[in-house]
Amino acid sequence: MNTFALVSTIMTPHTALVTVNPDENLAQVKEIFDTHKFHHIPVVHFRDIVGIISKTDFMYFLGGASLYDDDRFENESRLKRAKAKDIMTTGLAKLEPDDRINVALEVFCKNWFHALPVVKDGELVGIVTPFDVMKYMLDEKPKFPHMVYEPES
Image (cartoon, rainbow, N blue to C red; front, side):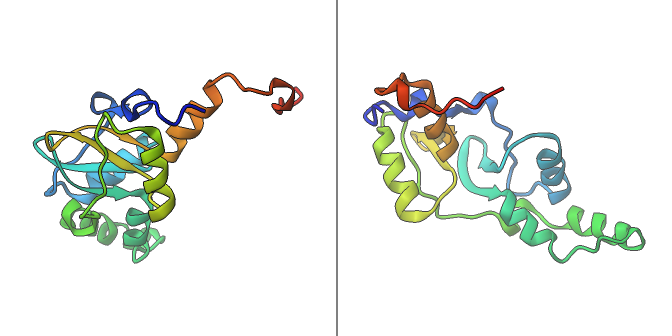
Protein backbone atom coordinates (compact mmCIF):
# COMPACT_ATOMS: atom_id res chain seq x y z
CA MET A 1 0.00 0.00 0.00
CA ASN A 2 1.26 3.45 -0.87
CA THR A 3 1.09 5.16 2.52
CA PHE A 4 2.66 8.24 0.99
CA ALA A 5 -0.47 9.04 -1.00
CA LEU A 6 -2.25 12.22 0.04
CA VAL A 7 -5.08 12.18 2.57
CA SER A 8 -7.09 14.22 0.08
CA THR A 9 -7.25 11.16 -2.21
CA ILE A 10 -9.14 9.07 0.35
CA MET A 11 -11.09 11.59 2.45
CA THR A 12 -14.80 12.20 2.22
CA PRO A 13 -15.04 15.76 0.85
CA HIS A 14 -16.97 18.43 2.76
CA THR A 15 -19.57 18.50 -0.02
CA ALA A 16 -20.59 14.93 0.94
CA LEU A 17 -20.73 15.63 4.69
CA VAL A 18 -23.66 16.68 6.81
CA THR A 19 -22.61 19.15 9.48
CA VAL A 20 -24.35 20.89 12.34
CA ASN A 21 -23.68 24.17 14.09
CA PRO A 22 -22.90 24.28 17.82
CA ASP A 23 -26.38 25.54 18.71
CA GLU A 24 -28.21 22.85 16.72
CA ASN A 25 -30.49 20.82 18.98
CA LEU A 26 -29.85 17.12 19.45
CA ALA A 27 -33.18 16.20 17.87
CA GLN A 28 -31.60 17.30 14.57
CA VAL A 29 -28.43 15.31 15.37
CA LYS A 30 -30.60 12.25 16.06
CA GLU A 31 -32.36 12.69 12.72
CA ILE A 32 -29.01 12.81 10.90
CA PHE A 33 -27.77 9.64 12.60
CA ASP A 34 -31.13 7.93 11.95
CA THR A 35 -31.25 8.79 8.24
CA HIS A 36 -27.58 8.49 7.22
CA LYS A 37 -24.89 5.89 7.71
CA PHE A 38 -22.61 8.41 9.37
CA HIS A 39 -20.71 7.63 12.54
CA HIS A 40 -19.42 11.19 13.01
CA ILE A 41 -20.96 14.60 12.49
CA PRO A 42 -18.63 17.59 12.28
CA VAL A 43 -19.76 20.63 14.26
CA VAL A 44 -18.92 23.80 12.36
CA HIS A 45 -19.27 27.52 12.78
CA PHE A 46 -19.53 28.64 9.16
CA ARG A 47 -16.87 26.26 7.72
CA ASP A 48 -14.55 26.36 10.75
CA ILE A 49 -14.65 23.05 12.60
CA VAL A 50 -15.20 23.53 16.32
CA GLY A 51 -15.98 19.93 17.33
CA ILE A 52 -17.26 16.55 16.31
CA ILE A 53 -20.06 14.32 17.59
CA SER A 54 -19.56 10.60 17.31
CA LYS A 55 -22.42 8.17 17.34
CA THR A 56 -20.90 6.86 20.58
CA ASP A 57 -21.04 10.35 22.15
CA PHE A 58 -24.67 10.56 21.14
CA MET A 59 -25.52 7.10 22.47
CA TYR A 60 -23.95 8.01 25.84
CA PHE A 61 -26.19 11.06 25.93
CA LEU A 62 -29.20 8.89 25.11
CA GLY A 63 -28.23 6.49 27.89
CA GLY A 64 -30.35 8.56 30.23
CA ALA A 65 -33.37 8.35 27.92
CA SER A 66 -36.22 6.01 28.70
CA LEU A 67 -37.31 3.37 26.22
CA TYR A 68 -40.94 3.52 27.32
CA ASP A 69 -43.60 5.33 25.32
CA ASP A 70 -44.87 7.02 28.50
CA ASP A 71 -41.63 9.01 28.63
CA ARG A 72 -41.44 9.73 24.91
CA PHE A 73 -42.49 13.36 25.33
CA GLU A 74 -39.79 13.89 27.97
CA ASN A 75 -37.15 12.28 25.72
CA GLU A 76 -38.11 14.44 22.75
CA SER A 77 -38.11 17.53 24.93
CA ARG A 78 -34.65 16.62 26.27
CA LEU A 79 -33.31 16.24 22.71
CA LYS A 80 -34.75 19.62 21.73
CA ARG A 81 -33.25 21.36 24.78
CA ALA A 82 -29.73 19.94 24.49
CA LYS A 83 -27.34 21.43 21.93
CA ALA A 84 -24.57 19.96 19.79
CA LYS A 85 -22.04 21.98 21.78
CA ASP A 86 -23.16 20.15 24.94
CA ILE A 87 -21.86 16.76 23.77
CA MET A 88 -19.33 17.50 21.02
CA THR A 89 -15.67 16.61 21.38
CA THR A 90 -13.37 19.63 21.08
CA GLY A 91 -9.60 19.97 20.90
CA LEU A 92 -9.53 17.81 17.78
CA ALA A 93 -6.50 16.41 16.04
CA LYS A 94 -6.69 17.58 12.43
CA LEU A 95 -5.07 16.72 9.14
CA GLU A 96 -4.40 18.83 6.08
CA PRO A 97 -5.20 17.68 2.53
CA ASP A 98 -1.47 17.41 1.71
CA ASP A 99 -0.70 15.17 4.69
CA ARG A 100 0.21 11.62 3.78
CA ILE A 101 -1.87 8.57 4.67
CA ASN A 102 0.94 7.32 6.92
CA VAL A 103 0.46 10.45 9.08
CA ALA A 104 -3.25 9.65 9.41
CA LEU A 105 -2.42 6.04 10.34
CA GLU A 106 -0.03 7.20 13.03
CA VAL A 107 -2.61 9.58 14.53
CA PHE A 108 -5.31 6.89 14.44
CA CYS A 109 -3.08 4.31 16.11
CA LYS A 110 -1.59 6.53 18.80
CA ASN A 111 -4.86 8.17 19.80
CA TRP A 112 -7.58 5.62 19.03
CA PHE A 113 -9.49 8.22 17.03
CA HIS A 114 -12.13 7.04 14.59
CA ALA A 115 -12.38 10.21 12.50
CA LEU A 116 -10.05 13.05 11.65
CA PRO A 117 -11.22 16.33 10.18
CA VAL A 118 -9.21 17.52 7.19
CA VAL A 119 -8.80 21.29 7.20
CA LYS A 120 -7.24 23.89 4.95
CA ASP A 121 -6.73 27.40 6.28
CA GLY A 122 -8.90 26.48 9.27
CA GLU A 123 -11.89 25.44 7.15
CA LEU A 124 -13.28 21.91 7.00
CA VAL A 125 -12.57 20.36 3.60
CA GLY A 126 -13.23 16.72 4.46
CA ILE A 127 -13.01 13.91 6.96
CA VAL A 128 -10.98 10.70 6.95
CA THR A 129 -11.67 7.53 8.92
CA PRO A 130 -9.88 4.20 9.36
CA PHE A 131 -12.54 2.77 7.03
CA ASP A 132 -11.34 5.14 4.28
CA VAL A 133 -7.80 3.81 4.76
CA MET A 134 -9.00 0.19 4.64
CA LYS A 135 -11.02 0.86 1.50
CA TYR A 136 -7.96 2.44 -0.10
CA MET A 137 -5.94 -0.65 0.79
CA LEU A 138 -8.54 -2.94 -0.74
CA ASP A 139 -8.78 -0.88 -3.91
CA GLU A 140 -5.04 -1.17 -4.53
CA LYS A 141 -3.83 -4.13 -6.56
CA PRO A 142 -2.47 -6.78 -4.17
CA LYS A 143 1.21 -7.71 -4.50
CA PHE A 144 0.39 -11.36 -3.89
CA PRO A 145 -3.00 -12.00 -5.55
CA HIS A 146 -2.92 -15.71 -4.66
CA MET A 147 -3.10 -14.68 -0.99
CA VAL A 148 -6.26 -12.59 -1.33
CA TYR A 149 -9.30 -14.19 0.30
CA GLU A 150 -12.32 -14.30 -1.97
CA PRO A 151 -15.46 -15.56 -0.21
CA GLU A 152 -17.34 -18.30 -1.98
CA SER A 153 -20.77 -17.42 -3.33
